[in-house]
Image (cartoon, rainbow, N blue to C red; front, side, top):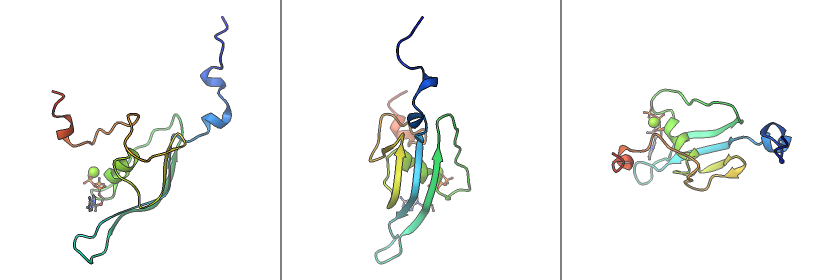
Length: 112
Ligand SMILES: Nc1ncnc2c1ncn2[C@@H]1O[C@H](COP(=O)(O)OP(=O)(O)OP(=O)(O)O)[C@@H](O)[C@H]1O
Ligand SMILES: [Mg+2]
């Protein structure tokens, strides 16, 4: 039987080549702890690609920036510099397409 449109395996190369997630020179600073202090740089010029079918784990010691990265992917926070794209679309805020298991438990408190 002829299904009509192109199958998943027949998608144009340009479409399937688009990274699912792209960080380009992303820097995130947090405000100074006190007036006149120096902002804290949590991540600096972070660049990576995740392509379709790949699996990414973010690991590292406490305070290395894991949650910062996830919050940026989820659009819960904005980078000071650089760009973040999901399937080619710039992340400008939270989206229903991105779940965030690390959300505070208070965000789930009405689900039980
Ligand atoms: N809102 C904030 N204001 C100031 N500094 C912050 C803020 N959020 C995170 N930081 C700092 O940025 C750095 C990275 O924090 P982050 O929470 O991303 O680390 P983490 O790798 O998730 O740590 P953990 O394993 O403990 O969860 C830490 O030094 C943290 O103190
Ligand atoms: Mg964390």
